[in-house]
Length: 246
Image (cartoon, rainbow, N blue to C red; front, top):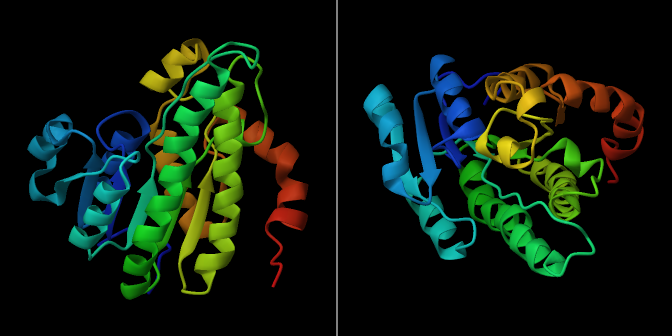
């Protein structure tokens, strides 16, 4: 099956109720997606998208801290061809703070363990439906640590490492894996990180995913800061990360 675009595909997006997730839902529908499962913790939080797009948006309960909710969602959404794991959490804080370990545990639980549970639950679904796509929303913080949000950066670096492994593992079943690395994006999370003044529209992330499916890229650097970092990282990515070890 051809996955150079998402027209007529069935999609699932975690964290679909706001920010990047909401922009992905809206953009994918405009690009012709047949149906989008809006995977959220609170089903009511996605009601505005259901009102706007009707039965093309299907609410489904997913909490990345609750593995059983992920397993149940995979059993319900058996027709999914594209999974975008967008949901994540952010907590700022110093490595020397008393809460450093607690914030790291919290963010690892969602940003890393949640990713693993999503991959384990949905890889068989994607395989059964012809391979499909698994896109993970990582961050430029996967590649560069910032001392005022170091535990977040550590969780995103771990998520990026897992995404690299998924690219190799899921290739065997014909699943395309994308690692998406936004910089400052205009979202609630971006505001919490103090990035409001330099943030760019979340639509860039959605469009970046669609473009990567056409070009066959593994890494997606959708915005200005991300493109700058991606350009500097390109040689290492092409010569080390993207070289198959098999």
